[in-house]
Image 1 (cartoon, chains in turn cyan, green, red, yellow):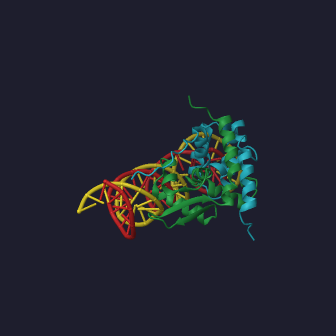
Image 2 (tube, protein in one colour):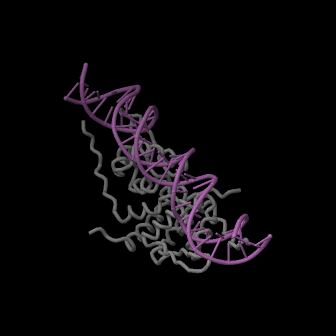
Image 3 (cartoon, chains in turn cyan, green, yellow, purple):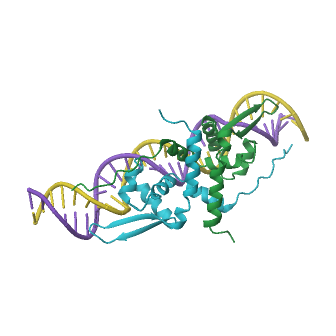
Length: 111
Length: 111
DNA sequence: ATCACTTAGTTACTTTATGTAACTGATATT
DNA sequence: AATATCAGTTACATAAAGTAACTAAGTGAT
C-alpha cells in the first residue's frame, strides 16, 4: 500500500541559497572575522588557526563573487591586499548576533 | 624583518561551536525542516531532495547527540520513528528568521 | 651578487567527507 | 511466493578539504 507522505512545502530558493552560502565550511567564520574590519590575507589566516591558505583563497574568491566580500589591491611593495565586507556582507551581522545569543544560552560554558 | 600582525581576538568557543554545528553540510536544512513539526525519516528525506539516506542518518545522530533533535520510537508494525526538535533545537528558529530576512533583502528573486 | 625574507597566493599529493546504489530484517499485502 | 514498507547500513566512487612545498616580484643584509 502506498502510504501518504505529506507533500513537503518547497523551500524558498533564496533562503536555500543563503543557507548554502553560510553552511559551506569556513564561510561563516571568515565573514564573522571580517565584521571586525578590513583585513589582509595573512591576518584572516592567522585569526582562523586551522584554515589552510588554499581553502581561504577559494572562499574569499567565492564570497567576492557573491558580492559579500570586497578585495582591494594597494600597489605597494610588497603588494598589500585588503579584504572587507560589502554592505551585503555587513547585513549578515544580525544572523551572527542570533547565533551568539543561542550559543550563550544553550551551549555549555567551558570551565 | 618580523612584521607586526595584530594579535587576533580569540573567538568565543561557544560561538565557534555553534557555527561548527550549523555549518556542517545539511544540518541547517534538517533543523529548518523539523521546525515545521515532528517528522519521520522518509519525510525528511523527501523534503530535502538531494540528501542521501546515509548522510541524513549521520546528521540525525549528531543532532540527537547535541541535544537538538529527539528521536522517539513507536513500536508499531512497521516501526514508526519520529524525529522532532528539543527546546534547544526550537531555540534556533530566530537564526533562521534572520537568514530569511537577509536572503529576501539581498539575494535576487528568481524570475 | 647571493642569500634570506616579504606577500598573496598556487601546485601536487593525501586524507576525509559526501554521493550512489544495492542491501538488510521484520512484517504486511497481493 | 513475490512485492512492498520502514529505517536505516554497506561497499564503492567521487568531491572537498588538509598539508607542505613552491611561485613571482621585490627589499634588505652579507
